[in-house]
Length: 325
Length: 249
Image (tube, rainbow over the protein chains, first blue to last red):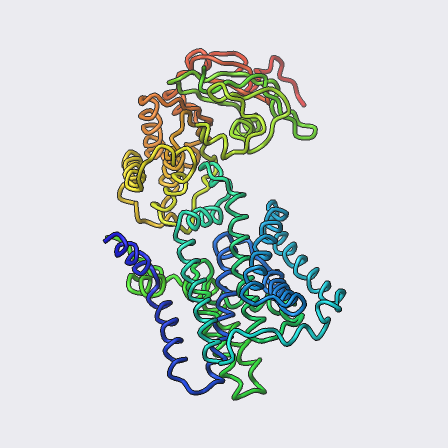
C-alpha cells in the first residue's frame, strides 16, 4: 500500500507529454530497422541530458551558465583520458568523470557565488575557455585538435547503445524532476524571484545555489561521458562555445525551469536538425531561422507560454500540474 | 533578557555616518515605532540588525545572543525576522509555494512533525491575514496590499520571537493600512514584540507604545507617542526651526 502510494506519487506529478515522448522514442527504436534514425535518437537523448542538467541550475535560479561545455567536455575528456591512458573500464570512468564535474561544480559555484547576471555568465564562460585552451596545451594527453579516438563503447550494437543512452536520460529526467519538485526546487525558484527575501525566510541561499551547481555539473558530467563513449571519440568541439550555446538554445526554446521543457526542446530540435539534412544547402538557414522564430513567438520557451499555464488541460498535459479547485 | 538590545550601534558609509552610537531596547510584548526624516538611517538600522549589512561597532543582541558576524538566515533562525520596505515577493510562484519557502528554514522545521502540520499552519496564518482564498493564486496576480500581507505572512511562518516591519504602510490605501495595523495589533496581542519603521505618523502613533526618533544617524528622542509629538527636538527634525528674523535674500 505504502509503496503503491509512493509509486503513484512519482507518476501522477510527471508530465504526461514528457513520459509520452520518452515512451515513443523507446517504441520507435524497438520497431525501426533504420540504424540511422536510431543513431539520431541517441544523439537527441544525450543532448536532452545536457539541456536538462543545464536547466536545473539556470532554469531554476536564472543565473545563466554560458560555460556549460566546461562540465560536458571536461567530463568527456576526463572519462576518455582515464579510459584510453589508464585503461579503466568505462563503467568506472564515467562515474568518476561525473563526480569530478560535480566537485568542480561546487568549486566554481563557491567562487562565483557573489556574481550576478552577466558577471556570472562571463565567469562561467571564462572557465570553459580555460579548459578549451588547456586541451591544446596538453596535446600529448588530450590529442590536441584531433581529440582522443578509439574509446570503449557500451555495446557493439547501435540499438543497444541507444537504449543505454535512453535509460540514462530517463534516469536523469526522473531524478531532476524529483529534485525540482522537492523543497530544493521550491527554494531555488524562490532564490530566482528574490534572493534577499529568501534569506530573510531563514534559508541558506548560498548552500542551495552551490548544491544546484554541483548537481547540474554531475548530471552534465554523466552526459559528457556517455557522449564520448557512444561516439568513441572526444574532441575540442565539446569544450568550445558551440556546445555551450547550443545547450542554452535547446533549453530556452523548450522552456527554462520546467525540466520537461528542455527535454522536449532538445529532442525535437535535434531530430529537426537531422531531418533537415535532406535540404543540406539550406539546413543552417532554415534551422537558425526556426530558432529565431521560436524565440520571437515564445521568448520564455514553449512550456512557459502564458496560455499553457492558464489552461488547465495544457498545464496538466505539458507540465503535469494538478491544482485542486 | 530583552527580545532585542541595540547598544551604541555605529555604521559609516565612506564619509557618511549612517548610524552614530544608537542604543535602544525592545521589551517583550512591546510595539516600538522607529521614525525619522528621510535618510535618517532607519532602514540601515534594520539592515544592520537583520544581518544584511555589517556594522562597524556596537552590538546587537537578540534574546541575549549577539548577532555580530551572523548571516541573515542565521539571525532568522535565532527568531528575528524582517519584512521589506519595497516588497520582495516570490514572483513566478503560487502563494502556497511562496509560503512553503520559509517553512523549510531550520527554525520552523524543528517545530513541525509532519507535512500536514506545515500545511495547516500556513493556511492558519494566511487566514489570519485574510488571504485564505488566495492560496492557489499566483503571486504575480496579487495587489500591493496583499503582497505586503504576504510578506508579513512569510515572516510569520519562521515563528519569529520578534518581528521587524520596514515601512509596512508605504504606498497603501487607507483600508489596506487598516488591515496591516490590525494584523500587527493582533500579533502583538499574542505576545509578539514588533518594531515598525514608518513615515505615516498618524497611523503609527495609534499603534505603538514606544517611539524611537532617529535623525542623521543619531537617536534624538525615545518615549511614549504622546511625549514624542511634543518633543522640541523631534519637531525641529521634522519641521525645521522657526526663523526669528525674516530678511530679504
